[in-house]
Amino acid sequence: MMPLPVSLSPVLPGVPAAVLLLALLGVSLLLIFAGRTLAKLVAFLAVGIIGAAFGGSIAVQYLAPQWQIVGLLLGFVLGGLIGVVLLPLGVGLAVGYAGYVIALDLALGPTVAIIAGVASFVVGALLSSKVLSVATALIGGLLLFDVLTRYGFGATLATLVAALLTIFGLWVQLAPDRRPTQPTTTSVGGQPSARD
Image (cartoon, rainbow, N blue to C red):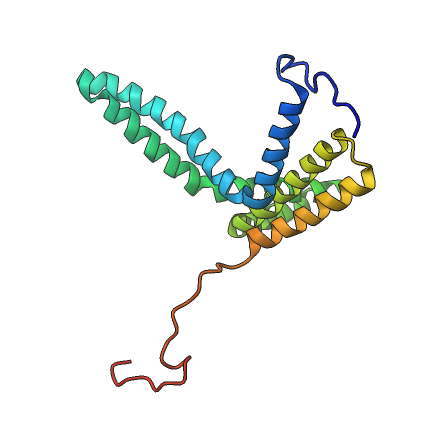
């Protein structure tokens, strides 16, 4: 294993490189295996904080000081829920813009590029959960590759490990719900009752 550099980032000069690499390793694995959930959590928290600021400013104007916490909490919860609900719209916009730019780069003309962008937006919004799973797993895999190469792994081994974990993470995130279902009378060989 190669010695770790003293600092990986000029922004965090006081953080030991080993701690930073371990943190990045943890983030990469979290993105690979639970990225969709992490994206929803980040959306909830980010928009929730904005909602709390808005709710707090409204509460200061209209509520007594002892009730201002209600405005903060209500703003946070409502803002967070709005963030989660609007997440598919954000994914749709990102995919739609990517579709538009790709079509425009292929010199298909502005009209075709707009049509491709709108179609990509619809597909991205409808499949936002799967798009989030794939995007976060791929980003986590790239981050894992970078961390492994910084730890001294060769490019081939780092690529293999990152690719295998990314594929497994995609399987974990995209697999249908694994909860066992309750057997019915018809699935175990019985006859349905008259009430069915």
